[in-house]
Length: 349
Length: 224
Image (cartoon, rainbow over all chains, first blue to last red; front, side):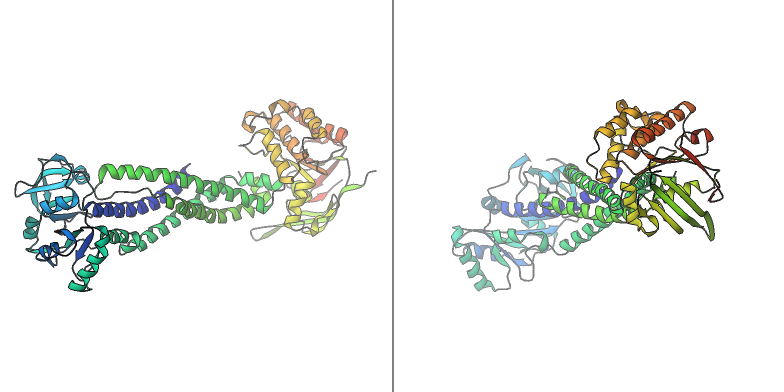
């Protein structure tokens, strides 16, 4: 049982890590979609997936609002708030509400006081705050004016002017969101904007941005996952090798008995490998079950920072890794058992 | 006189213990006719167990010829000896050596499975089970059986594949007098009623008397 648990842990490690990567990305894509925009415009030299900085002049917003086929334009400012993946977003409340359909307030109300902040449900849960409470952010206290339903652009919102002042970005913004009069005009808007502003401006339909939001497009994420998977393989291998070796030692006499009955080396090896296979399968199933446990734990303690998805597509991969490592780990003890001298094995106490 | 099922000539066995060679058998000659119940008696270290291990194909001889059921053991490879154990030899040990996690029935079944013998439920084996008196105890694990019962299960396991020879190494060494008598009687019955060739090693002269013939071993040789 302990061996199954020990193999289950690296499986959980893999599934949790993959689930986290996927969860964070899915969540980010969901929030991008929640803006309600059709096209995004960022500054030259920034990537579509960068999270901070405000290099665009705010004066572009009214200009783009009058662009042919553009119904609505709003600029926002992103600023890293220090915590794990915590980003504060400055918004023009009226324009943002028009574009996104407005926040759904679960508690409190929109900005009224100069120190008001609006946060989403997950962030409130993670920071354990409610409307009316005070929370520390960007090295100063804020009054939580409202808690909104998640899924719209960000988790922490400030009025755009206040964030610009705080981050010394007066009249500058991070990106501009555009709403187009008809979806079929999106390509035309994108190409005309590129023609006007220059190809160096990352301008693309929101759907394209969302499709770009994947594990392979986050710098360093894929190698990181590979490293963790590699470590998991080593752990599973070592666990099986050690536990099968112990099992072989404990069963030396039984192996001697089987040999005296005429069991061949291959027969003995098969038994050990079958047990390793069982451990691998058991560990996979347990690992999958435990990954639901980690998701539940993360959802309780850090729902805003670390949303974990369940990725069934990785179950067979994790299973293959666990079973492969188990078989490999069972091979050496299995061969040791198969080669045992029957007389010595029978005399083993 | 039946033909010999075990034929041993000039058998020597040298073990390497650390840096020292230990001569366990120093030229053994032995003929065992088919259907005989032979007792081998001798003090500890006389080479009885080594002879038992070589005849049973558990270890190769160093020199000499050993024919068991028509096979020359000196010429057999490791896998050849494995096949010999599977098809021609049944072992009964002093410590019973049943697999502790399996029931008595499963212990017997394992032997049948390893030998690839699907014809184990034949009438003769049923008769053997009745003779052994363990038919009602087959669903029990070894820890739930008495020593005598365990040894009877071990005998059933040893003969389930109808081996040419049954090798019994001190089969009563761990049993009280009553169970010893029962097990020895069973071995004799197997020999007389089914014609099973038996080679039994024992310290005990009374036990040896159950056999048709007794040979004595001392210092790696057969002395009588």
